[in-house]
Length: 418
Ligand code: BGC
Image 1 (cartoon, rainbow, N blue to C red):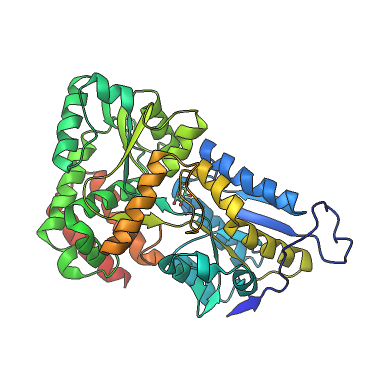
Image 2: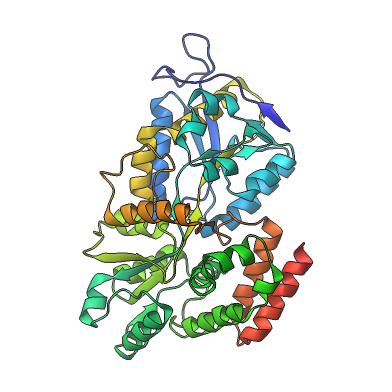
């Protein structure tokens, strides 16, 4: 159930900070809950705030720090339960449907239809934004999760190429470690462990195995020898992380790659936003390549609007929805964020080689059936199942648990979460 949002906002007057425009329309207002607080993220959300203001909107920022959005999710739930939902919140994947089922989302179909979202968004992505045939969220971008980032100078100094197999990765890591470089910059937070895990899983299980395990929750795949091999590789990689990794934020891990303290980071392309914000140049200062194996793990940021009273807030929701899918925003925001536009009709001329690689691989994966939703970033599974997997991954990574025990724990945790 959704509350219908009325009033398309195209052509809205440029200046307005009072309660209504000269023509009597309410001036748009939005309180926006999001978790874009790192350097690159803050630059990106500023693009939206500026466009919102330039269209007469008043933006109230509600940032909740914490990579991956766990803390933001908790803050959002508390607000909604207290009957004080924000006008818009950064939520994505199946969580959109979960909120919709609680009857608290606004219906943004009018904006979506007026702006032909079904004509300009890839079908799979449009599906995430629709609830029972209505539009319930506005997509912002396509982040790829299965990336490996590297410090170009460190690799060159150690005679290392970007690894294309996990064995090559391990061999490179051993060389780096012997040379006194931290091979893998990592922050010990559960969502970061999950991010590395799903990249390793995609490489070792293959695209079909990944889909069976983390989209379909197929128990044979979850309990397979290949899954044991995934945990074996995680154990090996634990040895490539420095001793101070516990609790480290992801952007601080990216900074370790930037300053040459560490060689690699496995992280989604929001890490590229950090490199760019620091003035680093892809192909020169840092390198990007998909993690070993075929496939593409997508992670689409989006905003859902909550059912709130007030013409000003509803105008704010309509304006926000229209802007984020708008062509100019899609280009400028994604240049800063490290992601690629979600619209298929935005030219990539101004984007760098990592972005074009992402777009090419996404198209090829789509054709080849290996375009897959990220489980670690809330695109593949509902919260309970994703949480059960992540609990296991992080328990294994932070202990001396055997791979066999981890697989058993994984199977039990998933079964208990259903
Ligand atoms: C989000 C990104 C964000 C990253 C780090 C991901 O789940 O999709 O937009 O930059 O987490 O917070």
